[in-house]
Length: 167
Length: 167
Image (cartoon, rainbow over all chains, first blue to last red):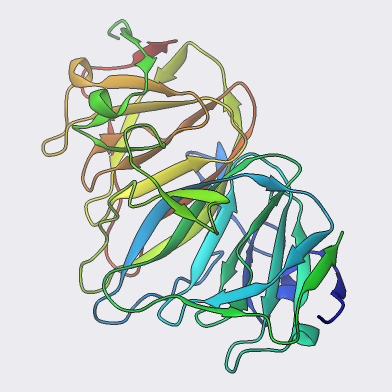
């Protein structure tokens, strides 16, 4: 049994996450006034991509128990037919582990990011990722992804063995 | 100048809001296990309706200043081409004022609801509503509505004069 690979998590930023998808936050986006100046709106902060002929946008609520670091990871998944947004509702941090789309990446190609709890993520279609991991406390998320028929989840063991994520 | 009409706000519930759209919450929805039982997912908690030939789903972030009750209202708007979701991110209450779709409703036909801050709303296409009003503190919302060309916002004065909402 191979030793776990140690993966150090980094703060989530749009630049670092760009190869994998979008960070849902206001930073880096321009806004316009709405409601007679009472509010400001930052438009199109994520690219939804579910537009095959059978796809539709689906809204889910996910409630997750919290995990504690270090976190041991053994599997990856991807959604070949659509993007997937996780937006946190309680302000708690969560952990995002991703690898490039395409062929299943070895464990040394994974990256780990920590959302500050006011940032959501949008996994681009086909990007390998570990299931989202809530930190600090049980958390609720709005999930925006593809509904409709078709095989839209591949799940695999991480090639090379366990990965241990440190915060 | 007519006296304001006093409108008493009620707690937001799916049953009371049903004529106008969806309440985004877990209550009343069934869930399935995800992430090896670590999380539960409540699917399709809102009906997105933006599916004319030029429409697409758009994700925005809205930051709103807070208002204090009683709130004086003078205008209504509706989106003839699509539904519109407001999901709060900070857990603060907000005020939802709605009227039936179709002909512009008189002020005596309006209803007011208070979200507990863990409930979002989805206005059905064409439902008249006042711009969302944050209570208690400045608040952030994820907005999911229609992007694309076409006239998708009608704004009118409330027929009959001002409405004063009490919490």
